[in-house]
Length: 253
Image 1 (spheres, rainbow, N blue to C red):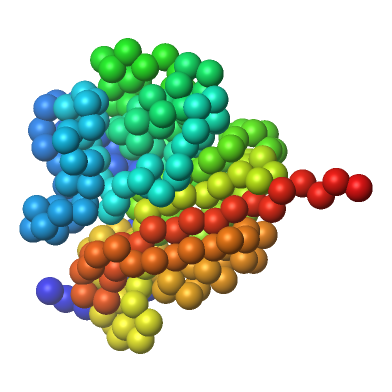
Image 2: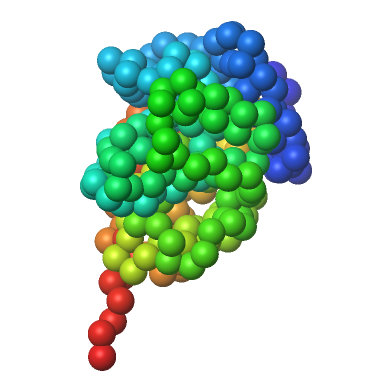
C-alpha cells in the first residue's frame, strides 16, 4: 500500500462515477461493496445494518453502501416529509416512505443518474407511491426553504469536500423545529495525518472530520441539541457515528 496525500482524495465527479458504476452493477444483479468486504461481514455496514432484510426489494439491499441505519435514530412520524441526502439505491427512502405513511412524503437526492434509475425501479417494485427521487448535489439541495421535517443521510456527507455547505443546506430546507438524523464516518482525534490521508483515499471520503469538528460544523450551521456518538470501528483511525441535531423552533413575537 502506497501513501497518498490530501490532494489524492477523489473529486466530486470521480465519486459520482464510482457510485454510478456500482449502481449499474446492482441493476445487473450483482452484489456490490465500496470498501473491504470483511468490514461488511462484521456487521453495521451495508445491508447488515438492516436486520430481517427490511421487507424491501433485494436490489435495494444489494445496493446499500452505508455505515449504519439513520432511520434507527431519525424517529419518523406519520405525515412527515423526509429527505435522504445521497439516497443511492433508495433503501432508506423506501423505509422512510413506509414510516411516514400515505399522508407523508419521502425524497431521495442523488448526483448519480444510474443510482436514481435503480432507486426508482426499487420503488416501483416495492409499490411505494409516496417517494420522490431528485437529481442534484447535496451542496445545493433542489428544494425550497423550510420544506421538510427530517433530513437523513447514510455515510454520504463524509464524501463531500464542502461539509459546511452541505450542513447549511440541510438546515435551510428543514422547517423550524425540524430534525437531522444521520449515520456517517468520522476520524478519531489524534489520528496520524498520513494514516488519515490513506484512509480517506481508500474509503473515498474527502476532508474527514473528527466528532468534535462535526459538532462545531453543526453549531456553525445553526443546529442545536447536537449528539455525535460512535457506533463501531470503520477502519484504522475511523469510526462510524450517529449524528442527531435539531433546527430551533420558530420564535413567536
